[in-house]
Length: 425
Length: 190
Image 1 (tube, chains in turn brown, green):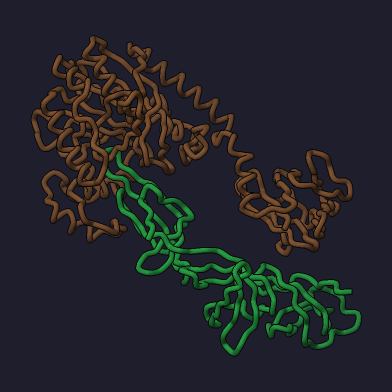
Image 2: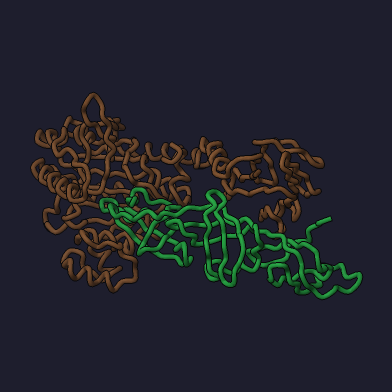
């Protein structure tokens, strides 16, 4: 059997079978190869297929038919691999092949291409230039730290990729946090880095396994100062005049009439049952923080940053990660996140300085990872030594550059701003 | 039986839920900054065609469904039972009229079809998009009536009634679109 496969545009990969006989390609709904494009004539071209040969005939179409870039004046015999161009549409002809093999062949042909357009890649480069200027103007120094390190951030839900080298385990960094803090302990005071971060198992509209992260630290900053810098940065990069700050507690109270800090797990589960949304099939093992995360993702986040960038701050202490607890309210941590158009863009901390506390958190996280049947991560690290030596009081923020570019350029998924997403990396 | 972890979830996966086969038609990965990942899936029931919304959290898993697509041939019909044969291993399948669906009225002996098997049993059969059928009975058209906008119902060999242009006569072979039941064109048989 012969096949035609569309190799460009939205219908890329669509396959038409050409059994023996005559087949019409056209805009007409009755055409066997129905192409609904205005530049395609109602009866544009025909394919006459016999056991041994396939002939394409242009049916006096308004915009013509090209085979291997030459116009078809009347008819021409197709040979395996010929490309047929009709208006903007490019099809490839396969004389006889299994449909799956034919499809795989065309996919391979196109996999080399960038999923982001040239125009987008150039605009992304301009954004990066603007971003770097914001940091240099504020007195930051750009640094570069190892992407492959013996240390890794210990987090229950981050899955670093391990690399075995010289009989030792190294990790592709899920963020450059540990190494950048070691630089602060070594004497640097305002640093930023643009690098790739790797998080296994993350793929989707807003996730790619390898992504571009912008991370910065400044010693002496209060949480307010760090949030202001982040808000200003979002304003200049995305063209807003203002930004909002909203506490985690007030956001939940305003949107869901729930006080996330005082509510018990039991009350939370009851509150969720009254809401119209699809909870996970298997509820076992979900704790209060998981439920709060569900509510944040489903109900709170979609309403954040719709008018202007919004920074959510004072996360529950149980979700502190590497942030210090608030000195005046131990129920919350000095952690904040930036949301624009309901999309999470950045996460920041007034950094935890206490080495013993970090080690305690690492051990607890590893216990939870064991419960989840996950690899244990090294709880000892160069960072712990740096903190024991003395980490200066500082704030740090990590921002996902691909998502920022996506919003700045009006795109709907990150593969539109990344040249080679993981499936064609 | 094999199972898929959330990490393997993607569009096109065939899974079993509550003892029925489903096709994952949409999968959205959602993850709060520091929380567990959620996999929001739309799944189509491969028997009934209904769509199910399900959310899974990182670490959950689904059973893989033993689903296979094959080419087969319609053999014959005996009262309400339709017999098909697998073209590669010559296995035969019996399907009820309900299982075959509306297009039973275009089925001609020897016709090539496409089937989906679940645990070795056919759950859906799809005919070719276009089939050629002989007109068995129709009212004669008025002489000289060659316009295509004048139509009449005709009965084809498989028993289906098709609306055709008035110039179609008994014994003509016509091409029919099985998805819509529409007349496509008259086929020259010489």
